[in-house]
Length: 579
Image 1 (cartoon, rainbow, N blue to C red):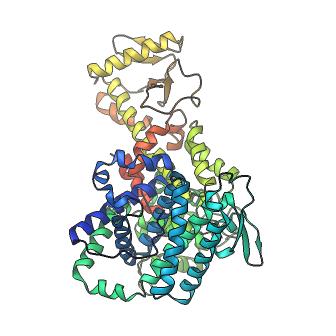
Image 2: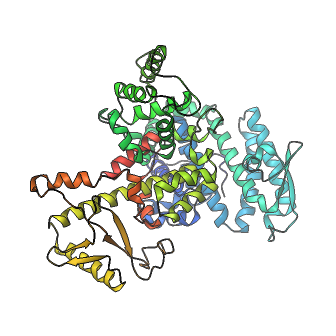
Image 3: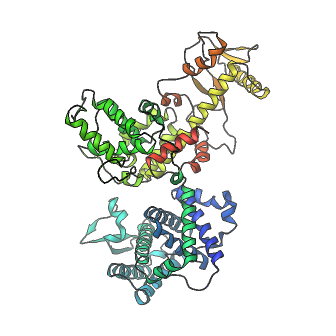
């Protein structure tokens, strides 16, 4: 595993430098989406031929590998967001290399760590804090090699121990996996991988910080060619993230439409809206977060004012803020909202909070927390997810695994992929049923209906009868609203006990129309209008309860679901669901 302490040397053409850096950036974007999953990282080169065609720059420890890494370090100077993203992705890649590499690879890597840290102390201009860390790294790597930890074959039960400063293993200290004694922690053999991963992150962050003070950085700034490379790579990163270039063409969202848009909200904003709806009040910081979110998703300032007035004009229910829209509070709230839109005070046009800032917040007794995936306990989080996921218990279990692994972004991304997939399925089946009602069916659709009928009859489900003239499944009793459910093939005993792999075709699900719309009026001109209005249910969440989604569906949707802010989550959910 390369620790990238010593900068590369030699000559390389500008075009080759850019191509290698571009390939590495695309690869790191895929690695970051995998959130460290070894199985998914292994399949990146197979699934992306464009990356595989120039994979030489990804060979661990090679010259091209180090050059492409250090070029992307220069791009980190463009944005703090990219710096954090780059650090996380490179750490995921390091962990993957650590797991897949053998014993000899680890010995070689620790030896390089010792040698390169010595080179940095002798030949590189380091700040005092950076130099201190390099001294600790050199001492630690020497102790690892001399103790025999890297060559140990009994890591779980062996007794190898080294002492390191607690600042070298902050993740382990934060998780309470080690005890701090006099500023030091005892690292046992089985924790060696976590130690090396933590050292990699620390040295990378220090290297990025050192770069901003390096004389070479000034030379790069003055080089027009490298500036163009940096800007091109940063534009590629923004394009890959998708959410950056998602802007609203107009502020067309109305106050009355907010309630219907809540199912598209991320879980953090759904929770704020739920509290606001139940108590008619929000605490100060929560009110600012929700106002900025609504601003970014397209709610104009006057509509935003109307929304808050509609709630704060009601009687206060519950504990907390007891202010109202009447009297002097009205002008104060109006000024505050206009200020967030850049219309008052310093005229600063504020943007909504990022996911990283919300994840850093923790619930306070007097304030609503930030990201539910970091601040809520398992029981409360399950309570919030159940109405959204319905009977898709396996999806909820997958989300909870990501939460326990401290990957809140991955958990929220799965929820977005689920929302997008289910909305598309609902609209597709809604259109199918409408066409079925009006006889707008192709031969393929008729074959599908006949296949469903035969399958239902074989399983003994006689709750519906088949009308050969209309080619539809008619229920015994006509309901006012349409509902959908899946008919699972007879090989499947329970909707949650099935193999999610469609590639092996172990499970196939068929759509079963369990009830059809009963039109009270036969007027053909108004039939479509009556159909659409009758299909509206009390909430989109209820539509998901009778629909099943497997993990393979989400894997197909996940690459489209990148976001960095709750507002980008909403825009993704809307744009992808409307496709």
